[in-house]
Image (cartoon, rainbow, N blue to C red):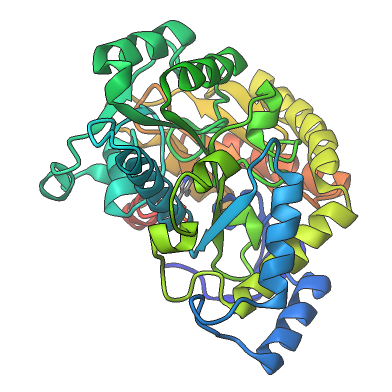
Length: 425
Ligand SMILES: Cc1ncc(COP(=O)(O)O)c(C=O)c1O
């Protein structure tokens, strides 16, 4: 049985039975500023009183215009056009639609293959799920996804968790570059690999190949974007500017459903009509209330220099986690960037996912929330990704509770209910 949430306060969530939970994974790695941030809620209240909804083909709004300006200023290179959606999945769909339409517009309809990685996770809608290297979340959906025959996968070598430069090159050669519409990649993995960063050399090589062959490089920064990894964007670690950048989760930090697709000017202007009329969109996308939440969130990120803070706190938390890894043999490794971190776990080969769910259940008993990740025994892991505003004392409290949770592990298997909850994450 799930607890019933009562209220949130900073890094804490409280249930109606009076229990407090330290949010060690920012919900689904999205409540990046914690709960009850007045700068955001008061802005939302003002917007609620002014107007919640105005349709995107009839009006823009002041918060939306201002948010677009901030996002395009923050983004690297000439990512100067923004298209909004409500969720990460919808934004990924939008990016895939854009790649397909972009080549069709230039009379290259054959240039429509999409290359992605396994493991990866890009969302639950059909196109985004087809593009995901996440067999657990695709289970049973082949009849729906079989139509998405344009998607190909590149896989890591045995014993590795992400594909290397040579494997990407080989996969692109196999598809033949003139057929390739887009590569979509997570700069730092999330739900599938558990915070495994892409090799910066891979991102740089993909940039070169995209320039040479004309396919679009799409960075899925739904989880890694807007400060989570200790820089504004995950791609910044490699110094790479993608053609399309997908943002979600942290853009409104759990205060409202909002996501965005940032598009390079040269691509957005390749159409004979505005991007919004090329891509169409969703009823609620970029509506004033969500825009106000997004604007207040991004202003907070800037005013408090949150990426730099995530970098500092990430180093502190990482050191704490490495201390735990040294003492708990079930931990295979500590990985990630900034505050997008995970514990790789030694999986039970007969029960996958098993260890990660056991740890999540043990942590919940210790009043700590964690996020189970992985697609198989090799990638089984638990993400530790608290709000970017966590204080050192809160990170130390997290590590203390995690230590106790790891100590509980062996005798406390996850219940079936926990398994079901985790499987629907
Ligand atoms: C990298 C990435 N892309 C896309 C998504 C899908 O986002 P949403 O759950 O908001 O649809 C997620 C969600 O975990 C994600 O981590």
